[in-house]
Length: 426
RNA sequence: GGAGAGGUGGCUGAGCGGUCUAAAGCGGCGGUCUUGAAAACCGUUGGAGCGCGAGUCCCCGGGGGUUCGAAUCCCUCCCUCUCCGCCA
Image: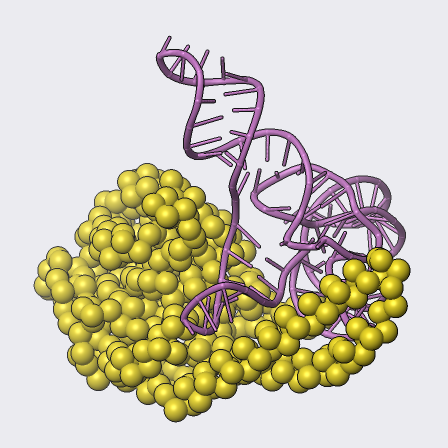
């Protein structure tokens, strides 16, 4: 959520900055709402002060044994007037927050301008795509030939956009997860977390998936009359919400968490996109990095978090590039995002395996997550960041395709061999 | 699933319809004393919003209700703990 002050006092500038991402802010509606809010709130508080004053006088009169009848008469119609104002105030505040929760974050000044993903800016490129002496197969052909990847049986069990991994590939996926977690915990200073995969609506509101993107989520409704749960679309949701409503002591910062979870996405609106293979699934594994830092540190943290995710690709010796997302391609909550894209020989292009973002105080304002500033002793909003470190399914795809041999065998990246009993080929 | 007990400021814990803008203790911070520290003593110490301002309003698990007035009474939901049952 944006700072309400930006939506009250600095509307024009806010509108201009949101235009960078192609979002049109309804200035007329917001300023009309704000004007009424101010007058109704002032009047409501004035009436409440009057009521409190009278009630106190009644209490004192009774204590002294006097008849409070005349005092009671004075407040006879106060309750009615007050409740009219209070009701209106709640309506206005509700309307304001309904609007505010659907306004995206302001892009950082360094975000490139652009109209779509073609305008993203390549920042750097690491590794060189391998020159194949034979036509490289895609991961579906490779996995099927190994008898270790089965989309048909997954479709029978569940439906489209699911996969069953067997034997060597199930083990390879487990090895990838283990490798990533070990790297981030032992070398990058992240604390590993195991978290719930079902979360409540409040958590999703905190990180920004709700209220605007409910259709992208899988929801569990009306379980024995209890509150609804949602399957997490990313570990970002439970991990970042760890600090919801907290005031963290400054000495504990930065908080750096890593967590492996399955992720569940409805992929509504991506019909016909990446229908083949493991690229876009309803359920996939991901290792997620999350940092909670002071505002002064957050852009340095974005660079280091991105570098931490890149290290995975470097250790696996996979060619990749880093792109800075342009305004139009930026996610709802992000102020700035770097995507990491890995080379896929079968597609002859780079595909996203990680998205590293600084949300500044957009998420933490929604969840009221703060730290105590030692200089002032006052609570201030934290900045939150996260990035995939990495998407496991797509990493597995990249390994299969980049490490394939002419005979269909898959070489095991050196970094993963300790996790697969030292074997060199699948 | 059944029965019961609870949720109050960083922590412990009192308050059970009217100066509660919540007692007390612990902890934190500042000070006195001290070569320094401890102890003792004194003071101080939650958060959010509105208003140009004097100021004002809200927060005792969440929401709703009763009342001139709610931490306190009623309804409802959530959470924690104990016992029983079931279960990995």
